[in-house]
Image (tube, rainbow, N blue to C red; front, side, top):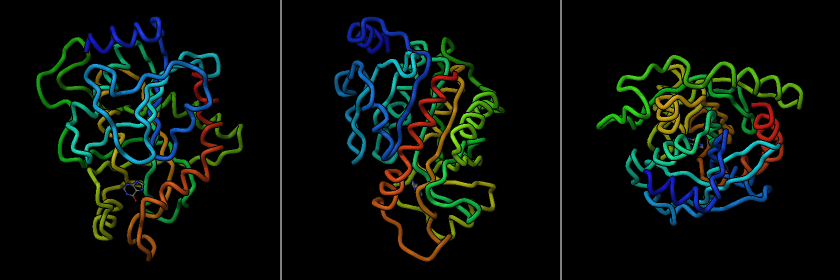
Length: 266
Ligand code: HPA
């Protein structure tokens, strides 16, 4: 970990971000709009190369709305075969770089018809259905406790701020529970019924590991899902990754505006 921090500090001339942003599928463009220092994951000690379509694999250090920010253009997914340690390593690195807030974004499937594709959803809480936990293993007591409380992972204060900003921007933002599964296969209709029964509103294949680790090490988390599609069985049709990317692309302008104003405010 120290070699990653030393490497980044040298590349960025000791840039000190206050907010980290993980940009999910189809949402990575946000970072392209800012001048800054771009460090490929592949060069950072401890980072692995990332290879999902639509993910660049760059850590971008830039001033956003006057605030020092580090953005992940692309993330590691458990379904790629990466360990939970690899998936959450960048979150720990961002903590060591000094971030206080982490904005985690993703594309997610909708579990019921109260929301529609293209809606944005603030994550109020999550269900970890990945069958494992990123904190398993020896605990690093310098970063966080062995048995962390999880009663307010997606902090109320950040959600309140995000809701106020969305209202000002005339963006209709929803709020709900995100279920994190491993993927990479989309859910079956029976699984979608199960998830609804468990109280989830949206389903995806990311975010939960990073949020667990961020909460553990004392970072305030804000989670925003771009609801790209009805999950399988909610409506009668087959689901493809293209549908996810197309919807994310369609709403990315309002998503970017919202993100910019949130960063400015926190
Ligand atoms: N299921 C799981 N993950 C997803 C979906 C979905 O329907 N859409 C985008 N990510």
